[in-house]
Length: 472
Ligand SMILES: Cc1cc2nc3c(=O)[nH]c(=O)nc-3n(C[C@H](O)[C@H](O)[C@H](O)COP(=O)(O)OP(=O)(O)OC[C@H]3O[C@@H](n4cnc5c(N)ncnc54)[C@H](O)[C@@H]3O)c2cc1C
Image (cartoon, rainbow, N blue to C red; front, top):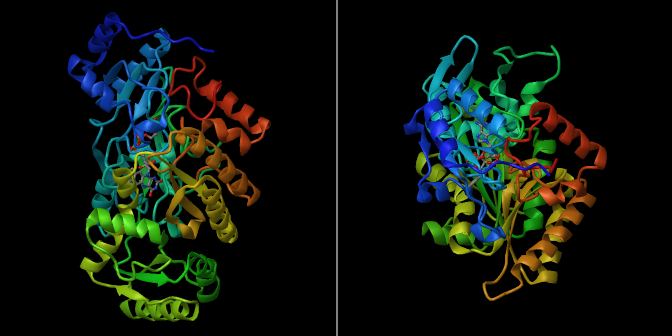
């Protein structure tokens, strides 16, 4: 077990000398708020707390801070906006939390190379907006996009609503400037679209949850923005009917939607209560949102007619066409606020991020029902069904004293079923602290050893975000 040094007054003075006192903070309130992410506080069995916060403003600051921490054996936890759902930004061993709030500039939109360069603290939605001004699109679109930072998206390989067509964050990353725990600065990748020169270190960094290096610049791929967008809201009588429809629409209509999202009745009901504005057919078993896009209004109209007819042939109760801004905004506000609504109304729950091959979704839904029946839990299921990624929220009634044990047993049972279906532990939220102890149920010892080995090559003193993904 690595032993870390506590942060003393002398260390804080050193940090202030190194990067400037206005970039260092240690007041208790700030320490507390920068020590959590969006995993419910009640989930943890102890209070994780940073000892000092640093707010670097440049790559040079990051490099100096990491070199200092490495020499003094002080753990460093990189932090974006703290919207993570795995405890990734929670400082498991105290030490320094390195927050990227002030590295928040878009450095370049390169129209020749269809790329955008940003610092890690830029909010995802600002990147989308900057691309949009030029008629382009950054296709990363997590539901937390109004708050999450691009550095956090890269570290988690965030998915979201457009993965089915454009891939997760990693598919849209061309290059990264990275500071290693030693303080060394290097670039992985470049503005080029192809690269087999050496290993693909860009995509080793993507999804590495801040355990290998700190991302200080990101070059993102932009694509032409499709000018016409239509969302279909499709209620189905049952979850099974909605789910069965998903692979068929792509196979038989031969269209890849830009989004294919799912909300069960419980999820729709809680979010409607939270927002105070229901969607039609609230009582339906499940709703799908199917987004189609293109540049030709007539072609698009043909497509949504075809998809609409196909929905009716496959048990849809109705097909609502959201082709105006108000309805589309209402639809997506509803979908994007489900996670928030659950956090507001419940304290004792776990939010899971299971992903299975799409053919396994019906069996996964059945397994969720069985687990709920066995442990007397309520499930709120929604997610990126086009990717086979279901966010399963298991809620324990407030009066249950044994809620930690119940949730633990329920998670294990659910994970077992997921594994049997060829699925895995997390599609986009990551392992972090929350799922670490279950990683060995999904990866074999050889793979775990490889991860440990890679971690040690990047971070021999194990100072960067220790306690996440694997113990070394
Ligand atoms: C309401 C809600 C909806 C969400 N919807 C989605 C969704 O649709 N899709 C999805 O994928 N996720 C979703 N999330 C989860 C979360 O928003 C994403 O994981 C997001 O990418 C986290 O970004 P962040 O800036 O908040 O990172 P943080 O939570 O601050 O950190 C996440 C991880 O990134 C590391 N990190 C941060 N910055 C850096 C850096 N510069 N260099 C190295 N490591 C770094 C941290 O150490 C940590 O391990 C949702 C969360 C909420 C609360």
